[in-house]
Image: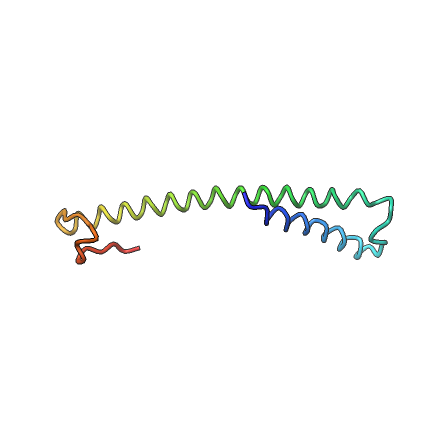
Amino acid sequence: MPLDKVLFWGGFGIAVRLWQLGIEMRPLFATKSLWVYPAYASVGGIFGYWLQGMETSQMKILHDRRDKLLEKRRRQAERDAGSAPLTPLNPSATVMS
């Protein structure tokens, strides 16, 4: 599983923490609040991991659906062409994609 989304959203979590402290006009690196940066990065990384999993599962669903539709179109074209099989040797038979 690629880690680009996890790393991006982890960095985004740190950026959110910096933005929050900037809005509050507080020091960015106070020693009492340094533990919060890994917490924000972890939350962002977990979100990135979840997002990557969702993208993978949705792409799988889309590919399966596309394959089913192409198979349905192929069967329909065979029926319309008088049951002539679609092969690369038959240039008159085309499948719309």
